[in-house]
Length: 124
Image 1 (tube, rainbow, N blue to C red):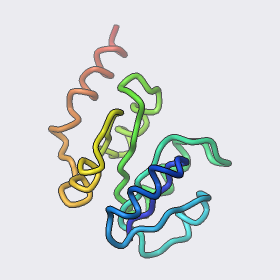
Image 2: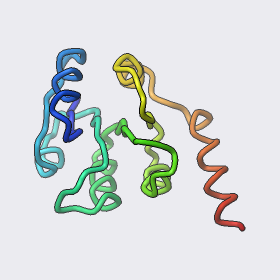
Image 3: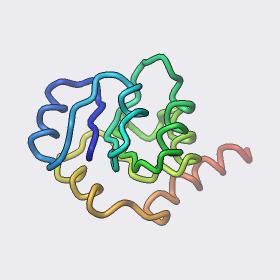
């Protein structure tokens, strides 16, 4: 089961049409309660959990997270990488990119550039 949690109705509908066995989700507790979820497609959005706490709970359930971000300068990128979220797509993106990540999750080598950048920033 692929859960869609983007807070963008148009994008949610498009993803739901394109991705088999998917469901649009409107509140975070559902994601944490869903026992059949294998993948979560999400954006950073305000909810009762802070981003790090919420994603930690999601990752603890071994749910693959595909994170849709505006750009590489989002402060939550470091937290996402720390939690092992390697499937990150920056805007602008194509719906086929998301579908591809569901089938072929990213490897560490795909995101190592971002980790290197963060490490260099912290050492300065």
